[in-house]
Image (cartoon, rainbow, N blue to C red; front, side):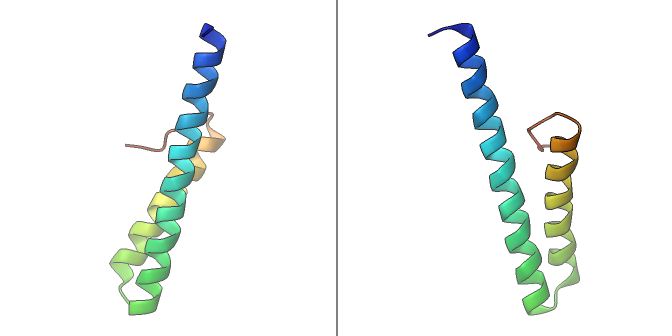
Length: 64
């Protein structure tokens, strides 16, 4: 496997991880809204925002 192919695979894996994290944030936000828990809702928003910031800054991994 070439170095370029490996780099592409790593990038795709990071993007997938960030997308999964954003989806998890959406679910947490929805659950927080449903049960009326502002802390859970805020946590979900923060996860979604972290993914957005990571994508806009060129970093695909939104992990702290």
